Amino acid sequence: MPGFELFGDLERNEVNDVLKSGVLMRYGFDGMRNGHWKAKELEKELQNTFQSKHVQLVSSGTAAVSVALASAGVGAGDEVIMPTFTFVASFEAIMMLGAIPILVDIDDTLGLNPEAVEQAITAKTKAIMVVQMCGSMANMDALQSISNKHNILLVEDACQAIGGTYNGKPLGSIGDLGCFSFDFVKTITCGEGGAVITNKKEYYLNADHYSDHGHDHIGNDRGAETHPFLGYNFRISELHAAVGLAQVKRLPEFLEIQKRNYTILRDALSQIPEVTFRTVPEGGEESYAFLNFFLPDLEIANNVSKAFNENGVDACWNYYNNNWHYIRKWNHLKDLKSLYSISEEVKQGLEYLQTKTFEESDHYVSRNISCLIKLSWTEDEVRNRASKMVEIIKSII
Ligand SMILES: *Cc1c(COP(=O)(O)O)cnc(C)c1O
Image 1 (cartoon, protein in one colour):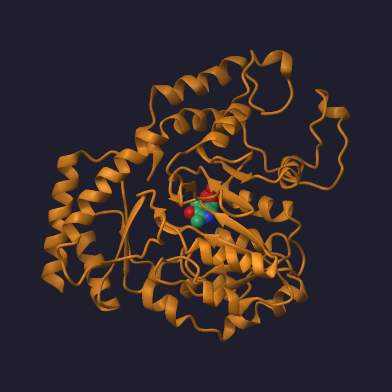
Image 2 (cartoon, rainbow, N blue to C red; image 1 turned 90 degrees about the vertical axis):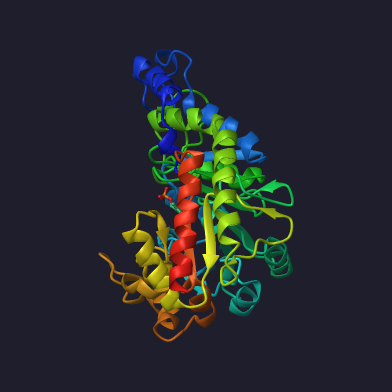
């Protein structure tokens, strides 16, 4: 996945354009910037890449999720349905708005289980947030039907699935709003950065204003702009956007390398009858950023994971005991450890976490191994890695 592996002259040249003018801010200073508008250019590129009418760059993927939800009016006391297997950013972004994260089970896609989503809908549900984990996707048709039927928003966190598609559409462009991260370890990086994409002009304008203190961005005198509503600062800088501009042009190359490396590993592991793979919904194509596979049980998965580590097969994880990606270890959320007081509404809204169990998620996450697909591997290195992985798994099963 990580675009940083292939950081080079293209990226340096784009950054140097910005350094030469010294205008590090994406808005204003028209006279000083030698015609360089890296953030604007990157937004245009991303409109093409994600086949989306509108793109708003922001400072991170986490900011993208908050800005997307805020732009569609999600706020205090609203419930947002999200998966148990994701990144901590999902609940952080929801709670920042005073909204309530409602965690539900995943299925063998490693994404939201549509039945669990349907069961979790209440009168307070404002949005379903699907997270396209590890380069693939949840059952989008089913989720879209539920969102239509109940008239609730479908927001897509595609931070880990840049370049994946569903029925020919880029992941992130299927829901009402899509979110991306360009942090240092994502498929394309800005260093830090993110984007909100949408086809709805109203949401876009909201995102544009909200991420810059409510500025309306009309005219070219920043000081004279009006503020139609309250906002914050989630701006990306020109320096970060410059890196992303170089990286996005290389995305087709990155995806091709990912697919080649993924296919070699998958073909090798397919020879082991006990190894199975996540379900990719019909019509879906992964971004190949990760290879995910299931082993027969948690003990085997733990042993394989340990043996991989000890034998130089890096970047493979079993997320069952992981602090970042799975509900089991999110004690700071369950215990509501917060620096500042949290509203009674949110406290009550999260009480279910004391008792709710997630057997189906446990069933899949405990047996899953997720291997990052690197861009810098040579073909020989991938083939050696593949044989080593097969050897290790066979010796444990
Ligand atoms: C990386 C990531 C984010 C957050 O992105 P940042 O840019 O690091 O804030 C959100 N969701 C998922 C699924 C991610 O992988």
